[in-house]
Image: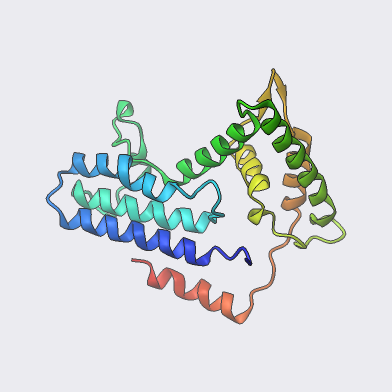
Length: 215
């Protein structure tokens, strides 16, 4: 197993695209469309979020597909602000869901559930393994002297979940005390020093063609 999640991402993208195309071709009303997306379609994509490393670009593509479908059903212009359809209904928005928000919610819930398992033994084992894994990451993180990746943290499930909690401006707490806050700050500061790797021919072609192939 090489931790290559490309096929899973492609499957999730294709699954979402097919479901949205089916809704567009159906006789579902705008409100029914919004309800189906919130209750069924988002959950069909989100089931694997806890373990699948999705990039911001993946989440943005999925969010854009959903937004275009909602705008089409409500007969809104394509230029209609996405913020308007995602705004809560109490503030005169449509209350449309965001895949990105659901992704970070799933990661936070998965980590919190693991560390607060009803079995004290299970939760302690999880915490000890997680603490040791975070400690083992430190030598591989980028620094001022070597600001390049030697290990991709995004493919480490628990570290990715912890980073998601921090990027969402949340704190992991237990018995009124913060957990792993110092560790996450070290990882976050180290990653902020990281310089992007130079493009190869294959990645450069992908960067150019991806916007052209999005539907």
